[in-house]
Each structure stands twice: as C-alpha cells, then as structure tokens.
Image (cartoon, rainbow, N blue to C red; front, side):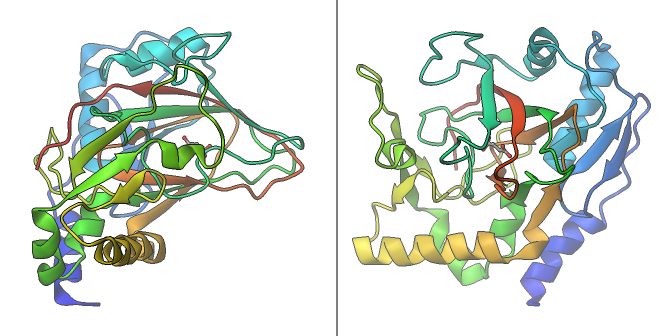
Length: 290
Ligand code: SIN
C-alpha cells in the first residue's frame, strides 16, 4: 500500500483513546463504525449521554445500537437530539411524515439503496444522518446486511496528485438519477444541486469525498468524457477498497445511525424471497462547503 494511504490509516489508529463515562463504545473496525451499549433508547437520555453519543458519532461515523425496542415516537425523539427531523420525500400518502418504511418481501422488484450512496445529496442541504431501525430480519436468520464506506478515508487514501485535481471541483447531484425510469408523482419537484467534490465535515473540518453513483451526474469543470472517467475512477475506489468498508449485520431491534456527510452506504439484497422490515428517520443537514 502507498505511504499516503498508510499515513491516512495511522492518523486514525494512533489517535488518543476515547474515554466515555455514560456509554460503552466498541469499534467495529479500527477505522469506521462502533457498537454503542449502555443505553435504552426507548427512555429519555441524559444530556451527558447525548453528548457522548455525539462524540462517538463524530469519531466513528456509524453507530450500532443493539436490542432497542422502539416505537416510532422513541425513534424520532432519539433522532431529534441531533437536529431537525427531515420529512420523507415524496411525502407518504399515509403514516408518519418523518418515518420511511424500508421493507422488502417476495413481491419486491427492487430494494432501496442497493448501490453506494449517501441520502439526499441532490438537495441543497443534504441529510446530516439517517437512523435505520430493523424490526424484522430475513427468516433464515441472516441477510440484508448494510455496508458502509468511510469518505474521509476515501479522500485521504487518494494520491496527492488526484487530491489536488479534485480539491477545487464541484459536482452536480441530480435526484432524477435515483428515479431510474420511474416517474416522480405529479407536482413533486426533483432536487438538483451543485456541491464541492471535496467538502469539509461541518463539525470536524475534515475533508471528504462527496460524489456518489446514485445522485452525481457530472463534474461541470471537466469535459463529459473526463467527468465520466474521473467519477468512474472514484466509484471504483469506493467500491473496491476494503479498508474503507464496514459491514453491519442486523439483528431484530438493532438501530444504526450513520453520518451521511462522511459515509456512503449500500443495502444488500441477499435474502429473496424472504423479507426484511425496517423504519428510517433522517435528520436535516447543511449545505456542504469546501
Ligand atoms: C438505505 O439506503 O437507506 C437503506 C439501507 C438498507 O436498507 O440497508
């Protein structure tokens, strides 16, 4: 592995140990993701607990909470500690406007999120984070894992020459790409926005790679052919660099909270014709800035 990639890993693996008083935080890999225990999310959390969860979130980007029996109200209350709740788009015809049912059964033709992406990047202010609560795992007892990829590390493990090329570029994110041949409901305005290719995380200031195959259409400063080649190179880097990845195995009543600003995720549909049931609540974010 190249020295710049090793340096990127070492910056994370040699940081001082984290100390928590109200929660236990157990990393899933040295680089990304952690299981958090010691909390019952169906109860009101103390300020200290919320502060420590926020600290763990910024350090690990993907937090896994096991054995959480949650109502929709519990789920929304927990999400509300991190920002304003983000309405489901397009608005559901029935049910809670902030809770997206993520369900796949033997009758499904596709599953949500089966490609590397972050949620809502075509919006002018993309999502801060999403909380997925799986209530029913596929009947065989496994399957439907979600994969996550660390976009700080994706950027930092590129060569300095490619990083310099990307640093001043923007990319157009077009919500129509995600509709893939389906027609949006009448009157629904599909979002389209231009964001820096390499924004800084608004809370940590750390740079990250912010393009994804589900929403990014092109890099307007490049020719179409150059833009396609650069984006394909970056998507291949994200998909084929295992150290960027962590794979979360679901159990019933697991909630995962991920940072859409600096991780991408990918659903796995390896359980057909069985079913998986989940609910997602998302949190509003801010405009990405370089
Ligand atoms: C999503 O893309 O939000 C869904 C992820 C999953 O169901 O694993």
